[in-house]
Image (tube, rainbow, N blue to C red; front, side):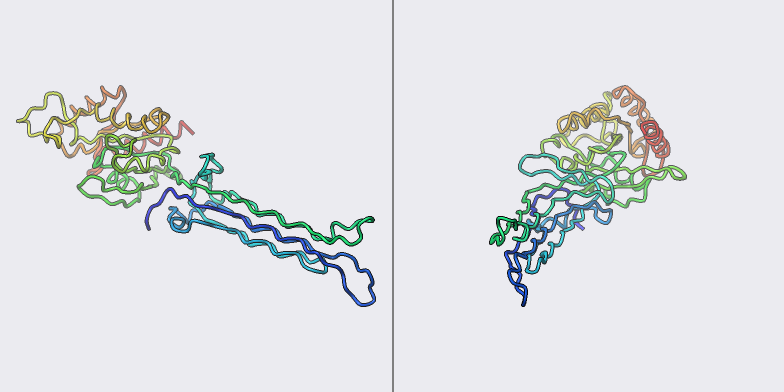
Length: 351
């Protein structure tokens, strides 16, 4: 199933049915009087959050959704049939906004949450307008029109922790190691094309949800690469985990004869602190509040370099970050337990 996390379309609730103009006709009942029934209520459009949906792909091609119109009133005081409600199931975590004004209309962040556009009220039949001075009203009320609106749906994943890093930083391997998630893993950049969610079990009855966001590159906030498309999914994350890959960063004393891989342009690799700063700069450019979120910093892929180099990179990253940094390898599992328990301790304290 294709992952779609933003769509726009028109919605319209049903029009109310018109009231009837009718007079009672029955043998031996002279001057039966007005008996026009009321029109039926128009069908509502109901957005309902459901765990049975995890993408907005169902709304990608149909650009208009309408509730059914109410039926007109009938003779003999019969009320018209109400229009059928239209129920649209959306993933939990969907936000609904007015596409014209960007006003947030609803945030369906729990299972079963609903947002309703009510259908138009049915018009009153001529029975309601009978009075001592008006015995035979020959008019009735029209039904109220439904509400028409263009809405924009945005899916923001419900995750406790967001996993960030450059392309090929080992994010997908890590989430597959510590959870049951099965993302695509390969040895080339941009393997992850959509966010992946994984439930990490810490102990009996204790778990948290982690989101693996596609790799960020310089200029991501301006639309470069893939990560910018999915930065919105970090909005609900209380904690961000930054992965700095040991095989993609360098040290100041790296020389051409050290066997260290060079950057793609042939120059030296960026330092660990510079790599971390690049990630935070992209977050701040997208949303300043994201850059202020609590962070855990990890040096990943420590199995891909010599132990002495891993220690030196860890020290350099720790100095640049100004805080404790964890070293880990998702391939061997080294350090992953420490990361899981560090996340759980922070989440427990935050809760």
